[in-house]
Amino acid sequence: MVKKILFILLLLVSFNNLKAQFVEVYAETDSADYYVGDYIYYKVSLKYDKNINVFFPSLKDSLVELEYIKEFPPVKSDGDKINEVYEFVFSKYDSAEVTIPEIPIEYTIGNDTSRFRITTNPVSFAVHTLELEPEADIKDVKFPITIPFNWLIGIIIICIILILGAIGYYLYRRYKKKRAAQEVIVPRVYVQPHKIAIDKLYELKDKKLWQQNLIKEYHSEITEIIREYFEKRFDILALEMPSSELLEKLSLNNEAQPVFDTTKEFLSNADMVKFAKFKPIPSVNEEMMEQAFEIVKKTIKEVGEVSFEEVQNVG
Image: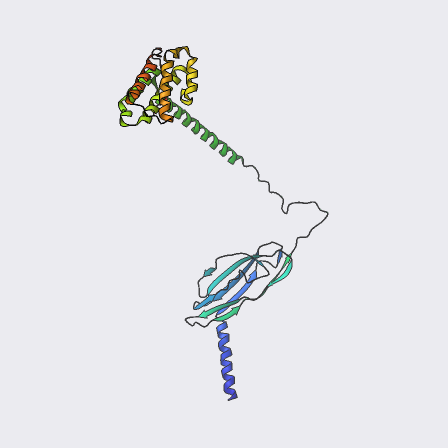
């Protein structure tokens, strides 16, 4: 009975050894000595049969003694056996003797869902601080590199700048020439203020605003026409002045004396409608139009139509 049990145990040990031969793993770093802050390249190489499925663990938070920097995508190559390499970059910011412990890696064989485990070898290295000389001058870790001037590249750059400048100047000249060809002389005629005012009064008369019970609108438009006429005829800011100030300005102008009383009555009626909500009878509305024509016609200053030329860009 004892011999039978020993035989079974021997078979189990042999089977476990057989399984272990399916996967080989080796871990290493690119050096055994580093300075504080250096990049530490840690590489794990796996070699296994094609029917093996390997589950490599995450090392980002596993190695607490080291600062994780980054991880490279695994490199895998096929052959009689699969070779797979995992590479990581770590760093350490104080001096110490460091050992990366054994990393357990699980795997399965074929369609069997049972997981087996193999571990990497531990890897040791030292991290040193830089040796300081307290009395030495401060200097760069590496001396600046002086790059010699390449005359060929310099000449090429100068030629490119000259060519671009010539192209820019040519395009500018072409644009100016084209713009000059598009400029034409367009005549513009100065129209005398009384003609503008009379045309606008006729247009307002044709609107028949007060006949449509738009009394306030009618009085606002007719006074605006006369005020605009005063601005152009007597060179005063009539559109911005209250009626009292406008009348004061007109009283000081000799050319406005023939229409001063008419203007006073005209503005008074308009202000009553606009500000006192006065509703005049139809005859007053008609009289407002007559007064407006009278103000313009009695202050006409015939200077003749002065025409001049203005350059405009057409295109």
